[in-house]
Length: 85
Image 1 (cartoon, rainbow, N blue to C red):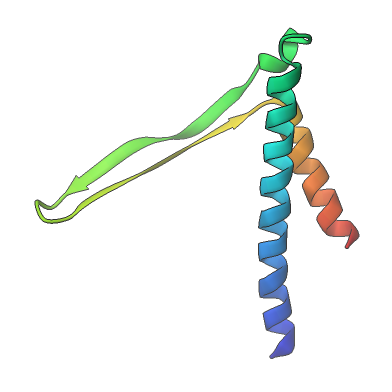
Image 2 (cartoon, helix red, strand yellow):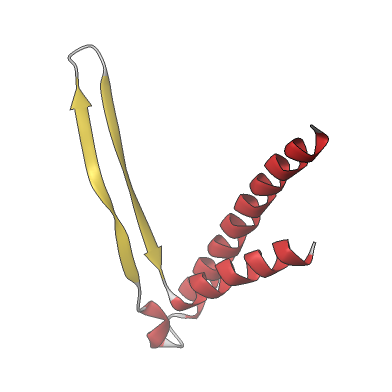
């Protein structure tokens, strides 16, 4: 039982490290883009927002994932940091 809890907690640590790594890579990319223009190249994947309107309840869902070179390196660094600990 304790093992299942530990693995559940580890998933959240992985998600947190990936989020921090992606944000750090994206911020670094935005900061260095004026000096290194090739860092502006990105790929965007996602779903356009879709809305379900039931007159009394409105639900909108969708997501967009933009991946640049330093964002990818930040995600990889977050995963490697997770694997190390």
